[in-house]
Length: 213
Image (cartoon, rainbow, N blue to C red):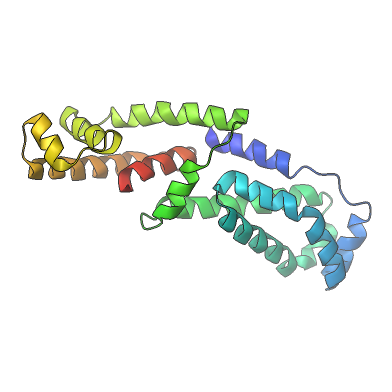
């Protein structure tokens, strides 16, 4: 569901009336005209960057992705004259590159800064509100698939921020047992999350924040 939401949002952000001379510009760009390319770049930059920011929640990453998208346009400029709907073509390129980048970042545990900045980003638009509701639902559902002891330790550690010593005291176990249960909980959750990565990307990002924080 989440990819459907963000894809709709992305399409909305990239919906803009074509330039009156766009076919001519595309033909000139195909011939290597940098001035024509500059016109197209200036006209569509804000939308492409905005779409990247909406999906990545990271201004620097959104800027890098927008640059990559326009570089791809230039490198494949020979195809441009045959494109009848340039806005739609730009949408497909933008969607694919951004989604590929997000999927790559989801499973890099070392990229904690990206994950934390993503889930820390807030927006009050209806799409974001629906996303947050779904996040909490799937979070509860996934954690509840753990065995009782693993679920207890995980919640105390990640949701209540207790140390292993505090968990051990509360559950009447040793700190080493607490650490062992936590490792097993993380391994189980990662296995469960990997099955949902394709369509619930922001949920995976949130849960991976819980796993590595």
